[in-house]
Image (cartoon, rainbow over all chains, first blue to last red):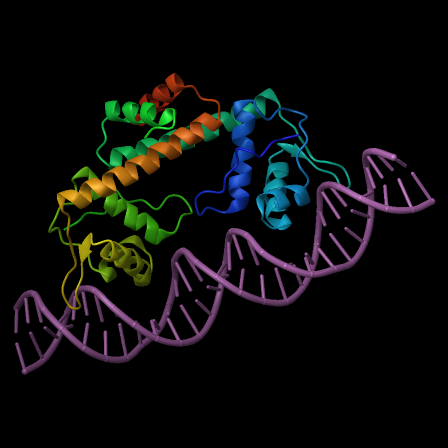
Length: 126
Length: 126
DNA sequence: CAAACTGTATTATTGATGTAATACACTTCT
DNA sequence: AGAAGTGTATTACATCAATAATACAGTTTG
């Protein structure tokens, strides 16, 4: 069963997207694996304190991408092939790294300073 | 006059926040300086293809933070002291670096791989 | 002075996010 | 078989971001 203990609703971005990305990143990290069961819509919505429809929206998008399997009455579970894993891995890594680089460059941070910042906050800096 | 040539509306985040952050990051980078004139609400809205009210919202928040000065009829301009610069610099650097680190760690990226990703995308990777 | 531009304020409307309350069909487990 | 849990669908509603169309007051500039 997939755990959501490290999930935290942070920014103001749509919750269904946060759930979707959390699961995708978990798959990429290898924490969430092929065949893993997902908490039901009702259970997860209660756990996160959001509406079941919000969870449903995230699950529906994951199913449309072929990353989970759902059928009425049964529990949903993760479906990951080596190919799909590589797809989303490059997709997300590229997006996140590019975003961070772009922001830091806008602030006049040098490449060396960027490395320093990564190190500083890697183990809960400050 | 502040330039918006490098501004690009990317993600789905509120446009007024993107404008606000663009200006803050410009101040941090030293591209936007104390006394610099801002494009008027109408001019910038036309340039970005958004509504004047959207720009007004961003400018209003900047004024509330004391980073720009506005008075009816006159052009708005940037107000930056050394103190405020340090404030927003640490604020934004910390936020962006922490966000990037957190995402990469969620995906199981190692500290060394993170450095590699920074380098890869620093000069328009791919 | 007068025109043009500035900041500011108001009101109405649209679309998306998220809430809320159901309802129904199916699977699983006892 | 039956109860509990599951996925799915529908409808109504609230809120916020953003659009749109104005209006007014102050300044800058020719």
